[in-house]
Length: 286
Image (cartoon, rainbow, N blue to C red):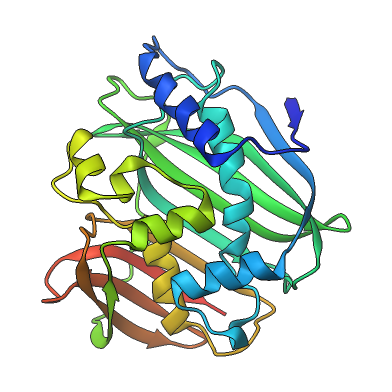
């Protein structure tokens, strides 16, 4: 395993330029991802950054540090990987299929965390090659949070790995619980907080350059916005949430939240305003 320690992050612009430059990659057959772990050895949970993230995603102060917040600290490490020769495919055009996260111990403002991100497994998909990235946060040597990102590289012939299958098979009926508005500028607002300034999220003009008719909301923003409604209005010590992304949420838009409450959690979908098209489907427990 190759371990790369990152003591100072490149700027978000630099990371995204690296992703753009990776568009020239033309890989051959990829049997496995290289075994690489990126590490940020000392990340202090900053109260102002937490507050900015909470505000843009709809969390209240009572939620404490939202359980998806560590994703913000791990995301730049994935962008660093995508911009290197070690990662075989172009970064632009990757599709985020799913994301799971587990909070194992409560995270607090002021905590010092070790953030790690490593390459994972390959799975075969009828539209191309699925791969995973695994992230985790440690506090004083104990894992307090972990996450798996599932992504698709479209158009790869003869993809490797076991067939990709859904982790969400519960077909319980859902009922309409809430609505929320995703404004035209939410992609820019979330991009400033997260560092994810992919042009498809920033404006209709920049999105059209990459083949989208309008800007689309970040999937991780949509996931967080749903959790802001579903999670208890208090800090939690343990939680797990898994989502699969279905269709883009074009901006601006009004979205609807559909839920089946379960013991200590819920099955849920974020749908369009009419409630007949899902943008994401998920399950949360706490």
